Length: 504
Image (cartoon, rainbow, N blue to C red; front, side, top):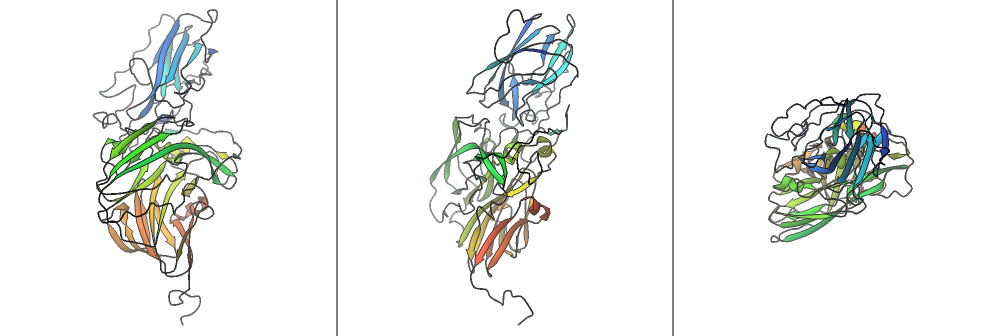
C-alpha cells in the first residue's frame, strides 16, 4: 500500500488521508457489477450498503446514509456484499476493491447509480477506493472489514474532534465554512501503458495577444463574464497529446480585466461532456474561498458568483476541486487584472503569458498520448514545463511581436502547481517590474524576476534593438523541457545600442 505524509501547501488547510491496510491472497467471487445477484448466488447474509460520492471539507469522499465519510464496511465471511452507489456531486467515479479483484462500472450524475455485489470469502481488512485518476489521492478511500463468522469486528479508534474517518481536520474549526481545500499526497508509482497520440487533438495554446482592452479612466461598472470548463484532447508537443482540463478550451484560461470598485458577475459552466467537477478560485476575490467553495460545478451545470474587486493588481485564478494540484497541472489556471482608479499607464503592446508544469507517465518527448502520473505530481517531478500550455506555444503556434521604439508589457503568471519561475527575457532588461503583481511595488532596471506558483508579475520593456528575444525561466534546464517563448522585434538597428565587432 501507499504511505502518506502530511504537507501544508500555501493557501489551503491540509487534511491527511490515511491509507488502508491490505492483505494479499483474498479470494473474492464477483457476482455482478450492475445488477442484483440471483438467490442461488447469494451466500450467508446479504449486507446492503448505500453510498454516494460527494465533496466534503475539501475532499472527494464516499458517504454513507448518515453522512460519514469513507466509512468502514463491516461484514462476515460468507456474506454477500451489496453496494448501491451514486454520484451526488455529479462527477464520474467507480468503487474498486483491488485485493478482491472486483470493481463497479463507472457511474456519474448523468448515468445514475450502479450496484456492485460479491461474496466475502476470507477474513481481513481490504481497501476500497475510486480508480479514476486523482480521486483516491483526493480522499476517496476506505476499508472493508471482514471477520470470521460469529467474531466481533474491531471497533475503530475514536476520532478527534472534527475528524472524519481517520482524516485530520482541515483546521481546528473544520476550515472556512466547510470549504477548506486539503491536498492529500500519495507517494507511489502507478505505471500506465503507452497509448498512441490522438489524431483528433487540437491546439489549446492560449494566444498571448488575447488581452482585454485597457479600462482607463472610467466609473465603476457591472461586468459579466461566463467561462466554460472543458476537458480537451490537446497537442502537448509535436507527435504528443494530452488530456487537458481547461477554462474555455485554452491554457491559460481567458484573461479577465476589471477595475477597483467594479461589480463582477462570473458564471462558471461545466461542459456536459466533462467527467469531472470543476470550480474557480480567484485570488482577487475576498471571501468564499475566492469563489472556490461556491462554484463546484457538475458536468452540464453552472453556478454564478458576484464579487467586487477591492485591491488593484494582477491575480491568478485556478480550479479548486480536489485533487487541486491535479486540476491545476492539467491546465486549469488563468489571471484577472484589476486596474486602479484611472487605469494603467499606456503602452504599445500587451501580452498574456503563464507558466505551468505537466506531470506525465512517459518521458518528455515521447510520441504518445501522455497520461497523468500521480507519483510524479506528488513528488513535484514534472516531465514538461510550458508557457501557455504546450511546447512551442510561444515559438510555433503564437509569437510576441513588436517594433523598435515600442514599449511591451507582459502580464506574467505561474499556474504551477508547484514550481516558481525566474522569469527572464534573453537580450533584454525589464525597465519596470510590478513585483508579485502588486501595482504599488514598482522596481526598475531588473534582469530577472521571481514569480512563485499562484503568483504574478507585470514587466515592461522599451524595445531598442531589432532581433529575437527569448522568454525563459532562468532555471535553464527547463528550456530543454519545453519552456521557451519568442519575442520578435522589427526595425532599424542602431549600432550605438549594439553591433558586432570593435567599438567604432
